[in-house]
Length: 403
Image (tube, rainbow, N blue to C red):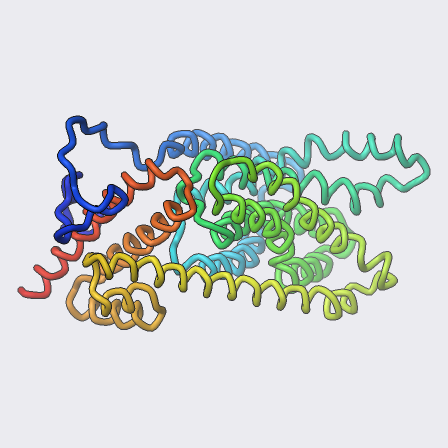
């Protein structure tokens, strides 16, 4: 997405005297110039997967309409939007420093709401039957609640994050990105699951509206982030693997990340029954609330680390002459960004300033990928493109400020 009034600069960009990033101490005259690489080679695959995920969600939706009827489906869908909105606010808070592409977030949500639910519905019963062969004297309901649902659902959700990482690794910079995509997948899954639970309470019980209200408070208001907390473990592990060079850590990280996700889901489903004598509220306030507070603290610390990384990498560009020290403080601190956006709104260039901040942050994180040895050649070319774009955006803002 280009800033308003900004024409992308050519690939051969001007630089400060004596500085050629990632190409050695001095520029050389090339005898061959490769074709400009595509920005995001996995975008086409993501679009196809997004369409398939949307089709899966439509199939699930038709099944829910057939089960509960259109009026109940609409009512429950509207109610399910409330916890979904709460989750989206949380995702926005985590993601606002370096927002992820909307196409990736859309795919994540649709995978969770559609494909993950389809996998759980189709494979869950077979998994329970397999467990009954191993544990024949255990209740099928208990096995489904405590073992089948956590294993199948967390694996299904985690596969979406894994596919996104493999298809669009460039947009994965570290653990924060993994948590954001995991939260989007989990929010989608919880949205569809909430419609199912709300509809069952509304249509399938003798208490009707009263049972629906109780279920809504329990799932929609007290625990909207439950699935997010589980799946975030997988996203965190994959994000850590993505920040390293090579692909050898990705599959082990996926498996290791699933372990706490599944265990947390098991605890959530079985904890009130096995440890608190079916007293959900004691379980909730003694265990789940502290765990949620701990998770929020951890995410806040990861965000602060990402901000410090942005500052450090942009400082390197400032030393080479690409930014002024004042611009680095503006781009790499929360207070600086707020001041910059206030100034830009007064000058009618808020969109351009927002793009300047976004591209500069992307530049810093790309430089980090180069520093750790991840896809060095491709990231060096992307670095050159980003430097050209940042230079062009700055020129557009300066031209507008002088009018």
